[in-house]
Image 1 (cartoon, helix red, strand yellow):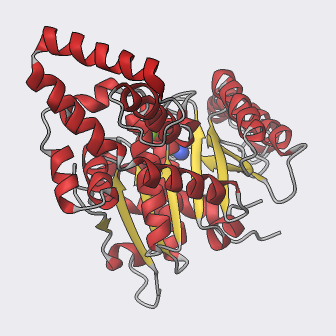
Image 2 (cartoon, protein in one colour):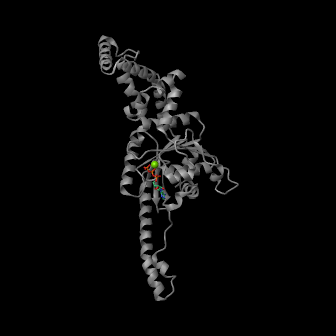
Length: 376
Ligand SMILES: Nc1ncnc2c1ncn2[C@@H]1O[C@H](COP(=O)(O)OP(=O)(O)OP(=O)(O)O)[C@@H](O)[C@H]1O
Ligand SMILES: [Mg+2]
């Protein structure tokens, strides 16, 4: 099995899994593989390890995606015709600001929000702002159509899929509680004398505690922000529809450890519940790909009869046996993951590559191990 069909056909790949299993590394390696196969790819990454960022030539806090130089993608093969690989580290601050500018009805309205003294508090105030940033960035790039494939790395959290809910929470927070508090929801519904009295009371209390200018500022901020709700809702619905469609695929990354496998099972259940397309497993840092290793007895057959050599090889063969058993265990694990997969889903092993990930060539090899066209 190979991820090749996903890399070739999908528009979005989302990688989820337990902390530290290799989501970010896999996202990068798959990006390299897809770009080397000719596609225009964007990897949206979260907090890559320093060495990985260096291998990709990724600056911290860049306002725009960074393009990996084409020579690097070619890896010494002058005849190769790679597509493009861009990488961007998700920065909620930058994304949020861009979202405000894009969705505000006028540039002045955007300025009112961004320069407002409350703007800086917003992310602390509303749960899910960070997740919202991921959703917003993904939606914006998908909509813009600059990339043929976008690979989204997710944070090490059981709530990684919350990014789909975050926009709703964000708009609900400001919409229901705050906006109506100021009587700004002109849509009525909740209007009426009683409600008006309540809002007057709240304004009065806030004003007497914090001063009238505070209330005025709060009102202007909420009013400006409420202008964005329609856009936020539209984007949320659009993104959910895209991520539920066959153009998207969710891959679960796991290591062979029990805790990571349990987490993957949790994510699989969540995906099914949410109607999102589960596309399979990446069993990372595994030895499952190795071909059947020779038995120690077979090795000993090649050793000359001399005692010293035999004793030495016998001692080493215990290590070889241990290695064989581990490979067998990982192969059985991979076979178990491959059972009862939905149509089109795959279970692939990514080899443990040790220190090789320090440079781009290592990443390329890992990408090839995952995304090469299937030989069988
Ligand atoms: N196949 C592999 N072979 C060897 N080392 C690996 C492999 N995959 C990942 N690693 C190493 O494991 C560490 C964690 O990887 P990575 O940062 O990709 O995990 P992550 O799931 O994104 O972590 P987090 O949940 O913290 O975001 C890194 O040091 C990385 O180099
Ligand atoms: Mg990561």
